[in-house]
Amino acid sequence: MNILGISCYYHDAAAALLQDGQLIAAAEEERFSRIKHDFGFPHHAIKFCLESGGIQAGDLGYVVFYEKPFRKFDRILMSVLQTYPQSYKVFRESMITWMIDKLWVGSKISAELGIPTAKILYSEHHMSHAASAFLCSPFEEAAIMTVDGVGEWVTGTWGVGRGNQIDIRKQMMFPHSLGLLYSAFTAFLGFEVNEGEYKVMGMAPYGQPRYVEKVWKLIRQESDGSFSLDMDYFSFQYSTERTFNRKFEQLFGPPRPPKTLFFTADSGFPTYFGDAPSNFNELCKQNQHYADIAASIGRPASVRAVANACAANRIAVLIPCHRVVRTDGGAGGYRWGVDRKAALIRREADH
Picture: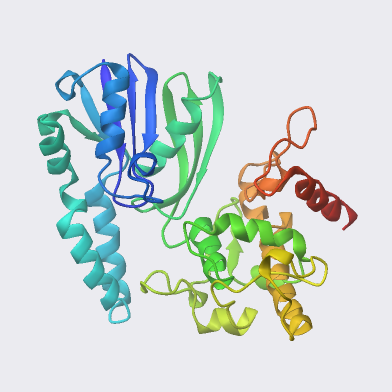
């Protein structure tokens, strides 16, 4: 049987093709459109997958969309109603995008591929995450944990996979989300949400975890290992422009202006930035403050709520990419060069 999977209308639209349970092809739309994080309907990715499988759209047994649009729309409506009038902009923009595209994704798929709607199925968002991890793994049985911003209503799950079955045992619900917490810090540190998170992790090694206790003012750990956010510090539930509010700023200071050059006294002023500014020392001090915040949200103590949820299994949820090494202990690759990767690891070991 041929099954086509599709994701779109949020970020990084993609398609994948299975034939009799075997992955034949998978691709993101941006690879063909050359639009970074292209979220539109993945025409080119679908075409690539079908051609790779040597089939036509009419040969598909099913097409599966990665989440359930109407359930997600329910969450948006409920959130808007609960936070009105602060949320009126969210309501306005949501109605535009949902009424034009998102609610009618089934009709769009049917029209584009020429297949009946009876062949279109919808997976739950976090089940899609769990399946992409477990079903592609070499394991017949495994514990599964998913954590992201938010799917339909769910923001994190844990469960068990056996064979080709996945049993979700517990889940956390919006607005309490580790992903949205990290998004708030990403925006606060001057980076674009859903794009600049890796920059936050890259900033962390230049700082010291001086603000761990302040981070814990934002989140409360429950006895079962789950957590809840103190929503008094956040605005993502009702704002289209900001993920954090003034109370958040009172705790951590003013946000870092986007596109500000990052350097510290330890790093020096990189030559590719040009000549050092006259207020170099002042800017170093400001950047050090933000680096310390980035370091604080990556400390094991800051993510112990999630670790404890997995009982005695020690896991890392927020892993800076420079910390990833080969199984033989080798440095492997790194976008900014292996020498810089080794220097960052040595700096962390010294602290």
